[in-house]
Length: 262
Ligand code: FPP
Picture 1: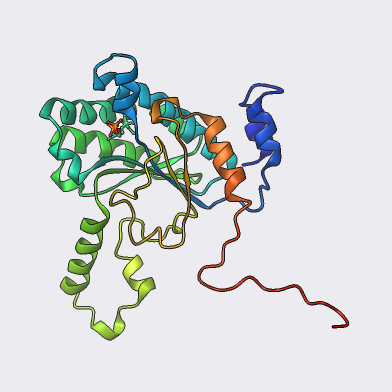
Picture 2: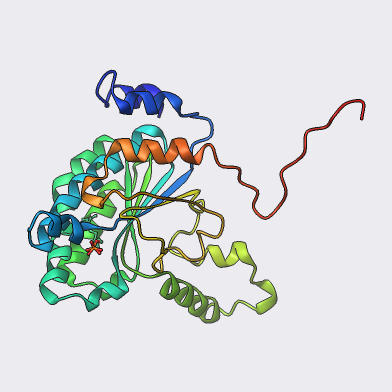
């Protein structure tokens, strides 16, 4: 995708257009991962039940997904439900499951239109059968799409993912000397995908919350005070512009310019 794909989607002469024009499309983050946070606070500030915050969060999911696809991001991963989230009241858990199902039913056409390939990362086998059915249907329908890969992390936790991968390595009889970082990465839910270059967290919290613990080793982190339901294309564009100003060294040092004649 390209600047043109973004410009035809954002309002003319807007902040979004200005930000989009600052982006170097040859240096996009290949994988953007997002910790969507602040739905409850968004609702509380409006004296609404928490459920309304989660419902409003769907608009932000829709906006971010379409923009990421139009930008040409290879992979977008959104953290929607952690294994720890089962500790929330049953009604909230059930609402989040229902919202995922509804989102997939309503948005499948948008995913198809934008050539987006959907998948989930997490312990799918522990989800209720009706949720699994809906997920499997969306995964199957979008399986041949060749554009952006869209992962929803659902019933996901980074430690559980690493533990499951270690168990798979043992079950497959992989000898310790055969196991290296590449081989181990291939045992994770994100096998074959680039690690996140950019990790976004909304609502100002400075935590990684058990998200993609292996994969974010060298991710650039961008935190915004914006609560997830208010997150829009403008914020994602701001994050990408900021990401492109970062100096990524992966533990090395920045090559010094050669001074001729010294
Ligand atoms: C964190 O806000 C958000 C979640 C636990 C769920 C995120 C879910 C959605 C955006 C809607 C469903 C998504 C999809 C993809 C269908 P919080 O409740 O922890 O907020 P708080 O910290 O302000 O209480």
